[in-house]
Image 1 (spheres, rainbow, N blue to C red):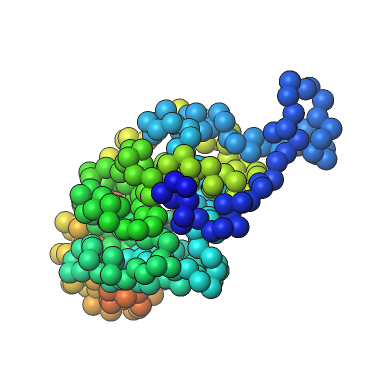
Image 2: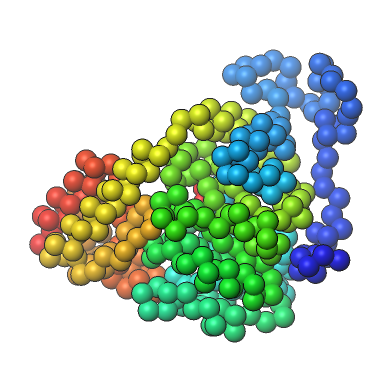
Length: 343
Ligand code: PMP
């Protein structure tokens, strides 16, 4: 048994995955009467998409510098989050540990799967509580969720701190790097070749500007990726998404990312000058957590001006805070003007 297998749900270890007629067939047929599709092309999507996303995965492999065996593609990284629970946690029995505050879907996906989440508050200035995270785990803890840069605090943790947890935690560490493209600290995805219990999540929804297409990635040991491929829906990435993402990846995004980072720094410098702003946390992401004088009133004021932000004031550790996504320079101008008008 390999190191990971003991943490996999017994029913998943012995799962026979769905297999399509095209998986099973040899040769190169040119008449497809196997999948009950329509023979008429319509918009050009009458055939089921490639369940293994071969072309797109080859492109992602070149972009991310990892072999295809170490890459899973999902319907957003939310799919990969849900798969972690379905693969590793027996409902009603196993549990997961997660930092608090962090991305809300870890708890929602856990609740749906009837898995307990043990939330561990971040330390002062949202630092990583390494010992408390390890102490929160017991024999039934299968997953540890980290998010770096973290949503909603915006800070990235150091490489060494994260790897220390990967080495010491007896289970799977899921490191959500949805915002890593905005961070000078970079990504730890290359470490999945070294650590079989590390799963790194990334997405095309943020820096790559394709939230509407729904494409997320997981990078992990080939054994974990194989489990994910067996448990996922066979056709989880639509033909339209596969085609459009492939096309979009021909265009570099570096200029846009640099612009967003420059605007983030501009907002970080200018927001504290406003009377309604009490504190702006430094951010490695494309958003800022901002403590204001009256979060609910300011949220309503911005909405009146046609600007929707995220009210995080009821989230543990974020009292009085709004979260502002960094927009275009013009959008950020409007945000600053509206905040200036607030009495
Ligand atoms: N992880 C984090 C930390 C996020 O903030 C989000 C989206 N807000 C996601 C994952 C989900 O991204 P996707 O669109 O790839 O499902």
